[in-house]
Length: 484
Image (cartoon, rainbow, N blue to C red; front, side):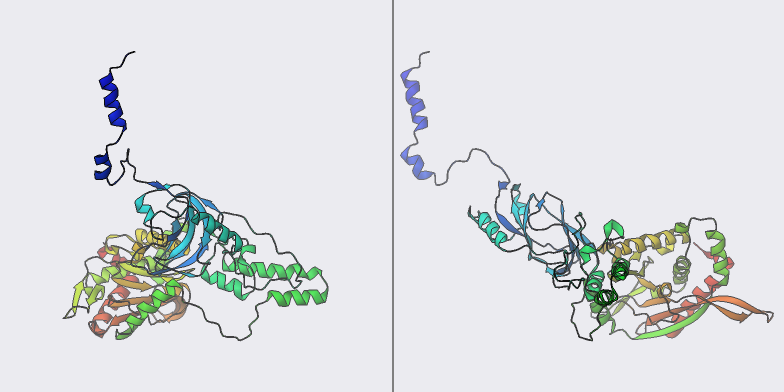
């Protein structure tokens, strides 16, 4: 094939950049584009805000250890804020090089949580979650960090390295660690108990949800150690029993407040500015209990109706006649003002492994008693599992504390601003009483304890509201005619 000379000259000119072009072009030409770049360095992954302006979180447990390989969306750890627990996941693939916190530590939002050796391409958005300058790292930086990591023994994040061993023989071999994807699942309270009893929580087999270690598991583990030692000599038995029992030395110890305690501290401190007054009354629950027994006889145990569901409905029905206690008070404006809330959103105080939580049942006025009972079960189960979200705890217009489920008759509940009222439900009990004919009969009674903000609610209005609730609960047949 022949090529003309002029064509060769043209091709040669294209291959040879001109002097003027090299002067004008200050940046090299790029043949294509992409939005990600490959990193092979160790970078710190910063803890992001998990919602509601949280500034710190407590590390409940780690799902990874240094040296573990993770993929995108793999769980790194579980954290507890002042309102809810959530899992932190990895946004990219890599190898864990360092954990910046131990279990039970308070992690600061915006600070490094873990160091990850990133071995994949990441987007600019994901790179923003990393610490450092954000520019290209030196090629040796990842290797140098890896060498430093090899020199430093990896801490055991799933246990307490300061806890004294259970056995009395220094040369004995500790029991093997459990190797599972959920190592040492336990709440901070259970971890503190294990420390007090001088046991390693990793050695305990959890019987809770997903293998979570409960308080009963810790106590059973300690009791099992005492029982197993009975086959040895009496001296060895006494020593082992002594070592397995908690040692109350009377020494003081300081502990940081848990996130839930910190939230309660702030909320109750603000509540000190509210002038409370207490109003209590006794309710005859005998007719309602008889009705519940007839209803529950046809239901599964998990679907039975509790007294609290009827109490919530009675309070909501009373608020249609006396709406003041369902109002909220705004004291931040130049002139204080009340907002009468159309929706009856009731916060119900429930006990949980992490402390007192108050999920909100919304639009109580539009729900049946059966629906309310189902919602109570739903939120109670979520609280017990540590699965309540921030949205579940927001927007209450009134609060109900069912302290009677644990014990106690009369209680002085504390109002949570901006609410202006709260009612505490005591434990019902059988008492002797006289009926209309003067005959001695048994009655089931409980006490409802009302607290109201005396800046806007007077005693008469609170009494009228409370008496309306009493009327509904004691005269269930008449209430049915008015119930919505």
